[in-house]
Length: 517
Ligand code: ADP
Image 1 (spheres, rainbow, N blue to C red):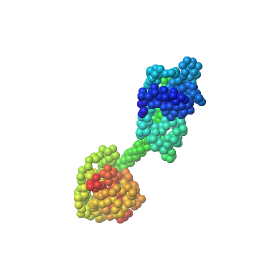
Image 2 (image 1 turned 120 degrees about the vertical axis):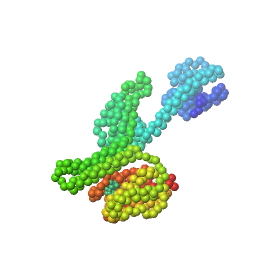
Image 3 (image 1 turned 90 degrees about the vertical axis):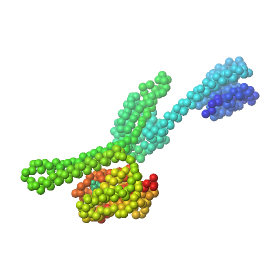
C-alpha cells in the first residue's frame, strides 16, 4: 500500500507545470503530469489521484470539460479537483462550480497558501482513502471467512435470485458460482420437497423472519441430499433514512445449508439395528416363554426325561440371549467409541496359542482336530483382549460350522499383502488392488474343513446379523464377524475370507507389523 498522496498536475504549458513541480517537490507527494485534457483523463483513470490541479484554459478539451467528464465517471467522481484560474475571473469560477470543481486557486501562486491548501485536501482525502482500504480489508476478511466455511452459504437478492455461493456450496450443490449466479435459488429444489415450501420460506424471510428446517435438495448431478437449512433476511447497512428500501424489508437473503446426509444414513442404520436387535431378542425369548409355560401347565403329566429336555432347551435359549446381549453391547461400545484404543506390544502367535488351547475342549466335543502350526513370536501393536476376541470368534465359527470330526488348522506368519498367494477377491474391508499397503504384515489364518460358504454370501458375511439361512440350526447371533471386522479396522488391519461350499473356509487376519510403524 502506497501511503503517499498522488497529485495529478494538468496544464498545457510546460513552464506552468514546472512551477507547480517546483512548489510541490519534496513535500511527500507522488507527482504526475498531463499536458492536455485527453491525457489528463487517461492518467486520472490509471492513477486515481487524491487531487487534480487542473488548468482552466487549455486548447482542445478545456478544464471545465475535463472536470465534467471526471464527475461522470463513477470511479473518478470523488477525486478532488482544484482549478487553476487567472486572477479576478468570476465567470470561470461559476462555470467551474457547475462543472464540479471543488476549489480554486489563482495564478500567480502564493507559495505558502498553495502548499497549505494542498496539504489539507490531500490529508482529508488520505483519511477517506484509508477508510476505503479498511472497508475493503473488512470485505476481504468476510470473503475469506465465507470461503473457508465448511457450510454451504448462498446469498440471493430479496426475490431469491442467486448472487453468491461460497466454495462449500459449490461442492455441495455441484453448481459453480458462475453457473449459479443469476439463477433462482430453486436451482437445487428437488421433487422431494413440497412445491410450496420454497414460497413459504421466501414469504417468511421477506417478512423479516428466520426460517430453519430440513429439506431434501438435488445436486447438479441429480443426486439427492438432506440439508439442514437456515434462511435469514439481510437488511441494508445504510441508515434507514437514506436507504431506498423500507428498513423492515430485507435487501438480500442469506441461506446456510449443512449436508446432513451422513447423519440421516447413520440414523437409519441405527434404527435398523435397533429393530434387528429387538427381533433377535424376541425369538429366543418367545421360545423360552413357550417352553416354560408348557412346563408349568403340564408339569404333573410330563415324564421326567421330557421335563429335563425342556429345562435344557430353556437353558440353551437363555444362553443365546446372553450371547446376543453381550454382542450387542460390544458392537454399540465400538460404535460409540467407548472402547479402549490402548495399544501394547503383543505377540500375535502367542495369542493364537492361548486361544487354541482354551477352546480345545469345545473342539474335542465335536471330535475335531484343532492345532496351530509351529511358529515364532510376531509382534504387533494392539489391544490384547480385543485381538483375542477376534481370534476366538474365528475359532468358534470354525468349530461350529464344521461337521463333527473335522480338521481346523491355524497358522501365523509374516507376509507382504501383494503376494500372489493372497486371493485378491477376498471380501470384507479389503483394500483395492491399487491401494494395497506395502511393508510387512502379520497374517493369522484359521482353516477349516467345514460346510463352507457359497460365493453369493461372501460380500454380506460381515454385515450385522447376517447369517446364512440354511445354517439356522447352528446357534449364533450374526454379530461375531461384524465385531471382528470393526476391531480389525480399529487396529489398522484387515479381515478376509475365502471359502468353497462343502469343502471349507479360510478366515484370515492381517495386522501391520510393528517394524512398519
Ligand atoms: P454367527 O456365527 O453368530 O452366526 P458370525 O458373524 O460369526 O455370526 O458369522 C456370520 C455367518 O457367517 C454365520 O452365520 C455363518 O453362516 C457364516 N460363517 C462364519 N464362519 C463360518 C465358517 N467358518 N464356515 C462356514 N460359515 C461360516
